[in-house]
Length: 441
Image (cartoon, rainbow, N blue to C red; front, side):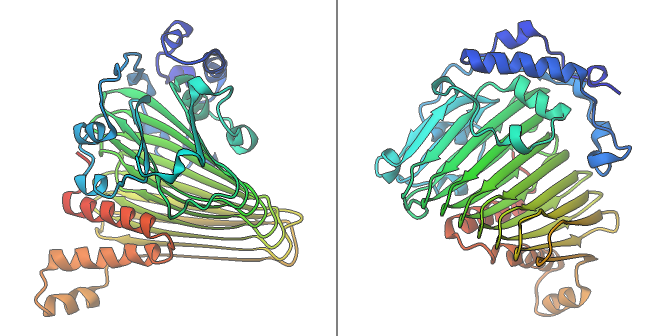
């Protein structure tokens, strides 16, 4: 089936209504032409065979061209109106930089008065740039219908550059909140993060929505130069009605390190792709993923640990909790290219089923083209331990409270590997709120 048979009603006239510089408008029209000729995702083999892509009726979504008219005074106004938990807002300090988007349009950009980032970090939006960013998607990402749709519907992008030789990991956090409020909307979000040589930084991205049936298409590009270090957290806190196809692509240089955590707790049909390319020698990464599925949600996580540099190291740890009739598939690929001698990679996927109707699949893959490398993978699927439940209940804890404690412990085993206190605190706060309320309102 061609994408034009199941597609959002888009034309050049509609795209012309969107704001942005000339280069962005040209990119949209080019993507629209490519979109018209592309194939819709299919469950009949290929990279979409485990997802419910055939259930996505793209024809019901439309592009929002109305402007929010800069009606928000600060990021706190945005977070309050879109019901982002106050517990998360309370973690933001005067040393942080907070950027908010609503339905793909920039709403606020606030730099705290006490922030050391004023002279050390460059934040530019599309109107201030000459291109989309660091072009990692152009270099690495497969050109499929959703990538073209993302580019065609993109209203704005943010490019963040940490200048060389800046130790900012403990000096302030850059937050990006992307929120959806309109029904049947298709929304793109694009962030580029460049950490200069021998610099460090912390970035947290949050994706949320009201209870709307919409389609979210976010892309995050991460580039680490020699000796750079980035602590990165990505939270998908969408409502159970919203669908998402997301991409995170990272390129790691010599002696650089990426610590990345992806938390996914909402959405109806969600597809997350995390591709990490270890181009430099002695480059390294730790990536954790925590997924929570409820109702009939379908979570599809695909990861790639791609090694080209000598002595490079990577570890991917995924923890999935599924209840009701939810399902998930975690597909992990470790690739060792020619030249990646003495490199190592690990991937671990654990799945906890809280219901007999829940279903999880784990699909590890190895592609090794070099000698003298080490690759490990492990996966497990199982229910809550009845022995642990009975033990807690024998100590006077109710069954419901015992289940919550065991789920927290299961998730904590992944977060315990995270070295950033800020990342761990923000992720734990969201997960505890999610366990208590079960959804993002």
